[in-house]
Length: 498
Ligand SMILES: Nc1ncnc2c1ncn2[C@@H]1O[C@H](COP(=O)(O)OP(=O)(O)OP(=O)(O)O)[C@@H](O)[C@H]1O
Ligand SMILES: [Mg+2]
Image (cartoon, rainbow, N blue to C red; front, side, top):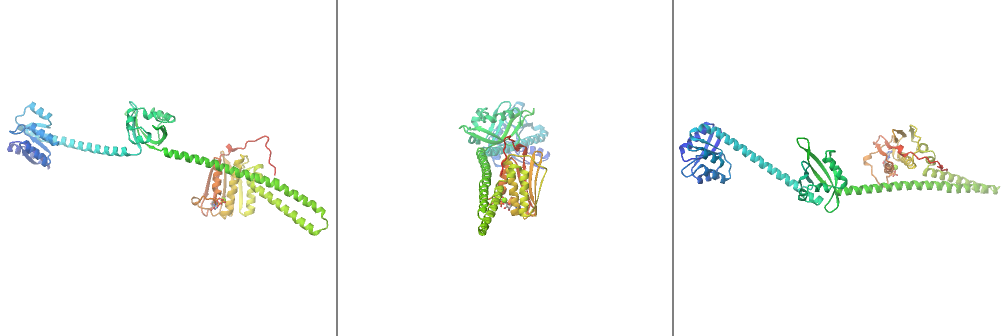
């Protein structure tokens, strides 16, 4: 049974009892307090909690309108029903206007239960609504508090029927120098301060020409004239006619990050230019040394040898002198050979004269002879001549890979493959040696071979990859878009002769 706690404003105890009996008949467990003055009502409202007030219309020292006033003063919102024998229509309407929920005649108490039920229901709905509203208000206040203190900028911009910033967090002032009020007061301000080149993107977005997926970057003019940068996620808002009416989003100041990225980019570009220059300088110096060794030293030694051979004819019969002379000529022969080999290793003439493949073929043969590691050179006949820096880079990469195999791999066999497919030249150097853990590779000044290869290939817009697993060997993979590096054929080209 539902407990109903009510105040009955009534001077007759019998009438109050009658009302309570009627309510009990309706299935309520009734607890009531009868009051007949404003003071008693005030005290009752203050001291306890009630579900309902039923009031007689006129009492000797009190009345329903006065009781309603007391209820209003208390700030409570209880259902109030007037039950009276002498109520007339006008008075009833006035009482309803003053806040009573309903009225009935004492001789028609059968209406009391449905009336009470309706009043309680309405009161409950009202209370629930009030509670929900309060909850909503609190949660909105909570979110507003978070938003107002967030460093990111939270915004909602109305696009239809007119352009207007509807909400923007105060953090916008730190970012762009304008306060939310300045932005609310000038609907175009937000658009005006977008950096000229980025405006187009927003115009297209607002006209529905493009949509934003994921975060977008925008540059803005700060009030102080600086250019600043933000990254924002924007969500479009559509109405029932599928019209873009607003957009909402969160923006973040990334000016520092962008400046840092730019600095990093510049410094990468500088390093790239520097390593390109260093690699070129190394090659130029090697070529110069190779030429000097071959042309200057080689020729000087040959001249000395010819002189010594001539001298031999002037020292007849002196066995000791002849022996010394022969030893000197042999030493010069040995030195001429050494100089030639040194010259070739510094800059193999085959690379310039015959091209990449023959030069690598010589290298592979030499490697196999020197190390005893069986090495296959396979190719699908790549015969094109490429720009000198490309041939040099690829030659040096294969050279470094083979040197690494000899030094670190303990391999019994190796393979160099040079093949072209779909505009890509693929060069791989593999071995069946000990392999290594590539992710544990340390870059240091003592191990620059692989890093150097990577740099060389990067400068050619190529790809460089190391596949290596401990105990399973190593493969160096290089890919170059060779067609863009085809050697320009010059008609007056002279072939270097060494
Ligand atoms: N084919 C290979 N087999 C096994 N380990 C290898 C192979 N190639 C490279 N490594 C490992 O990778 C490391 C780095 O090679 P990298 O060529 O960069 O330097 P390095 O050969 O040690 O010195 P350098 O600077 O003279 O070339 C080597 O020290 C070695 O441990
Ligand atoms: Mg090395």
